Length: 292
Image 1 (cartoon, rainbow, N blue to C red):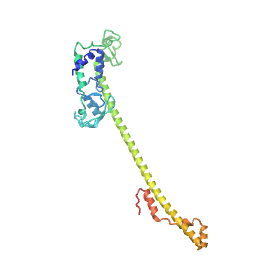
Image 2: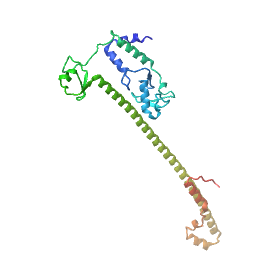
Image 3: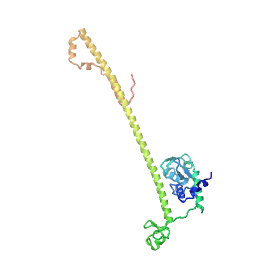
Image 4: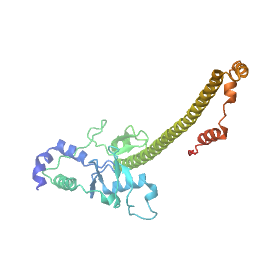
């Protein structure tokens, strides 16, 4: 495919060239993409070297001392959209190259270097000296200015430096700041993920303890209900025996005396021995009881 023919109308317009150049700027180094250009799963592009720098900043323990190679595996976040990029065993070198972007960069550079397609160089002019280009930077006032302003103008007593030097320095500082922010954000995300995992573990443990507590209380209630049924049956048998003796006319005086003591029924009932007590204690401690 001939990309040059397709891009000629676009490259011929200065404004379009500026817009295209902005699309070809790496968000890390703030320069035009340098080959090889890799495309992330989120469809954003990075210079492979910049992707390597971001990866090493996000994974400081993965970088071996004195080695320029990238460890395999690991992850980092896209500096443009914060999407997490998970690397395979090939590391950064496993990311797919964006050959289309690389071809566009080649065409852009070729067309930009051609006189017929190159736009007229634009310079910012000094407001005080309209014929002078802004070419120096006043370090004292922190503003760009021209040479005449330094010689006999408002900045003659100020400390100045060449504008390209300041540009490179500030761009480097900005790139380092972006890399630090990316790495710091990744560490914060890692802490948040760890806290979420801890919260999830606490919730899971609490849910298991509630389930275990319910099971133990259900078992205790079952033992108590069983004992209640036994006592009611014993009480019914005792009642039937006493009524039978009354009907048969035997022991009338003794039955009359017992009837004046309603609680005698409970006193006469068996307490169930140690079996029920043992069951209750074992269940309360979480020990399974076997029926005997």
